[in-house]
Image 1 (cartoon, helix red, strand yellow):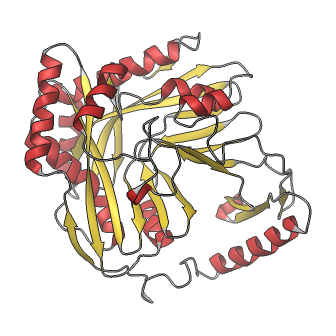
Image 2 (cartoon, rainbow, N blue to C red):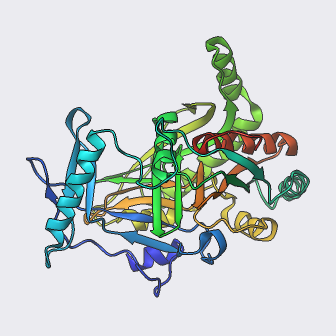
Length: 402
């Protein structure tokens, strides 16, 4: 486990390094208790520096929660207290968890003291800044296209941040709830490593899922907008499926995923053709994979072989990483890094941290990227990143131009 964490971006000396949990969960409902889980994630780059908006976010961090609320029968939450025994810690965790559970049942999910009015409205978005200008972005895309034509790259995923000013500090739980309501099929996440800093989002894809003897992953690439008009929405989806540029981008991701899964020693089961992943306001091409793995293959070990995929970095992996290090002028931090959980058996689920923001008081930094392949147009790729930024902007309380 130490080696897997180091390969994904942590170091042997990293504080709060992930270890298998020793605490036993105590269910608040009858039945067998699920195993405790460690929740956390990794930075995108191995050389991550926890500074500026990423202060407090190390290269890797996992925590054993004092308690969890998990979905039960008919949507009723189930409380699992997993605090270590001794000094009444487990009892305190159960009491605190029960208070939160009761509050949620009464509809009081917002964080006390955070900015949200009685109708659940969030603070006004005062403005959006662009640390990477449209001109610099276009120059980066043009540099990527030159590298692709020279044969150095087949694909690279360029990203850009957007800085948002708000009238007051928003309630992160309410922001996440809005994101989850918008994209019910997504993978929501929220981490608060210390006071004053929150990283949250809802990823449209999963990079690694280990369930017993099987390992699952998905390739998501190719993007188009949605429409409220059913016939127009159908047309947009059909055009995405038939788009030569988007099919090329997606095929590169599928090839990358096949190669990585083949290294596990088994031929993966793969969808015959991509299908549409339809989210609110945006849709993608998606291909699912599944492969049999041995019982001794921990999800962190498997994840180490997957990250970074062509969907968040590029292809081939080494040249794409070198291009991003030279071209991107900002720190990705945990953006596009794997976030999720694992348990003592080695099972776990991880998603790339996309459709996300890091919040500090009344400021938020959002991130979005676009896959650059032969045929990409710099202006259209800028517009695609704006489309990907919009869900988080709306969840924060407004949607000025991104």
